[in-house]
Image (cartoon, rainbow, N blue to C red; front, side):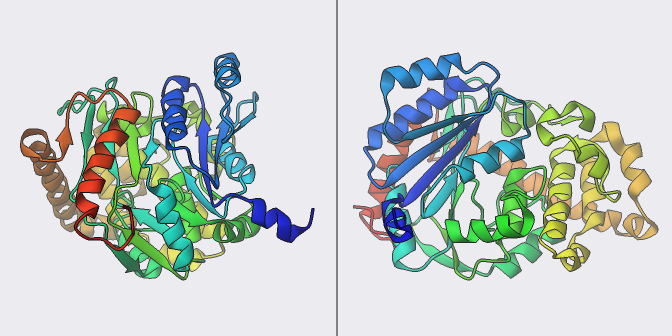
Length: 392
């Protein structure tokens, strides 16, 4: 077969889903995607569960022709499993999600819009779904779907400026930023291949999401933010968000086997050597910049902000944080403290109003299929009036 013919046969979109020990959620996701009856599409499942008997039986019975299943029994890191997922995919565009996440039935229309307009990557406003098995430390959002206000408008984003914004806040603001990303975003394969060619991985850092985002931001010439919730960001009890809700997202590096074998040994000396959301984002950012030969960008990373943030959020490791602080970090501490506490207060107020008064908060939502059905009704209602992407 010629290269030209092979390219023609490749699907428009690959939905890649690395998974481990979470078949319960994965089955809901597969059933959801099956209900869309997509063409020009493939779903890659990259499994690292020790015993995969359950999913093999499920796939044998259901016979989904859009699913391509790959399995590695040997325990590997999240980054390695994620790399394998993309390497096994063949779509012109790639969307990476977790097994507890979901997508809208309109995602292919968005990808067609991207191809038509020469867009290399797209980040969207996400709907947020908390599975019924997650119970928060303060607020209990279990079984709830939250939708931010959206307008189906597309905005051009300068990757360099967006990258500078999150570096100033030690990448704490990454999740809510408009940075390009393959995790819960969509990226053209040619961009991902450039990163792999340079770093030998699509995810040149221990936390795949931000490592990839930082890396691809140097290669993208046309990136957009789409104010249309085509991805459902799910949180189950064993996910990072689920652990965060229970304040369990913290621990010794040596106990986090999913990070990889040499992470503790290669950990940057400026980052407190402890597993937290803040520290792993910092480490992943630094490693991505180093492996992409962009070390000069590290000078823009705000270590003072990182130390202040970790001092506030993780009282049990304050001694470890202070060991990393220099004189200038102590001088900047009060200013960073005010910024961080102001941000946390705004989030607290927002969560309170979401829980009590939000128009777009849906309670008692049992699974990801129900989420997508609710989301679709909201999208159709909104897109009847206006929008940049043709949905109807």
